Length: 233
Ligand SMILES: [Zn+2]
Image (cartoon, rainbow, N blue to C red; front, side):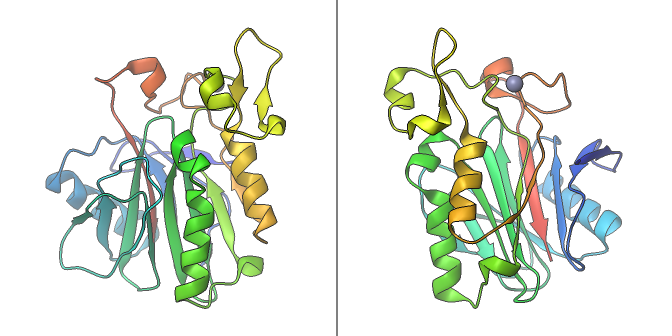
């Protein structure tokens, strides 16, 4: 079970098993700019004793994967939806408000990645693209790695049209209700297992219906806030 705990950012969701020297959590603190970036890095230091510079991306629902490096200040990368790094003192932030954040850590190779995977990213196989990049660029070993599936819209609430449902294998589509519902979490967990990542921690938190602390685009509309999934080392 992920726990909801207080922090200087307000309540954050923290998974149960985080390898030593890493930070993983989801915050609902909305993220409009630099001042908040400073608050985020301060919160990482307070809760996890990690001093890190934050990298985020201008997310475009694509499948472009970018390597993040240690910077002196907050950096926002152009048009990408996945970040990875093997450098200490780096933090990777992914913005979500129903889309699934997928965080991966290889604790022995000190490699981490953070992925924005809504349905568009999922059908473009962004998590597989990220695993490809890690395998190509580092000594990432899926068998010793952890994956975290953060708060997101779940099959309970992810009603879609046929044009979206038809892009997923039928095993991930629930057709027992009036309109199809897609299970992006099951889709992503299956992909991870296929690629050898078996230590998967699912938050089991639905942004839309949990009555929880998380922002939801479907529930709150365009004016709503965004959640930020963070990984750091
Ligand atoms: Zn739900």
